[in-house]
Image 1 (cartoon, rainbow, N blue to C red):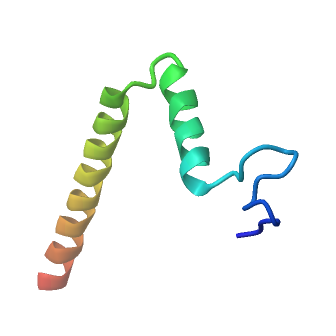
Image 2: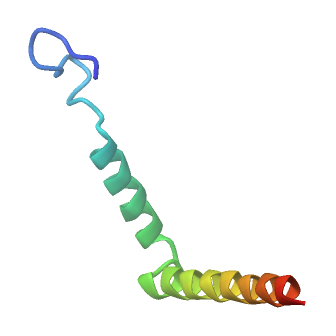
Length: 64
């Protein structure tokens, strides 16, 4: 990480760390309409169901 003599706090404000950027992104997404936690939960569940279905098809094809 880049920094100067004062510990990385120059005239531009504090150093932009990964955690700060991630916090900003999460706040921005949560402020969007229709982007609640339930939306991400349902998206994750549907993706996992798709992965499971494809895995079952591959397993079935391999056993034949």
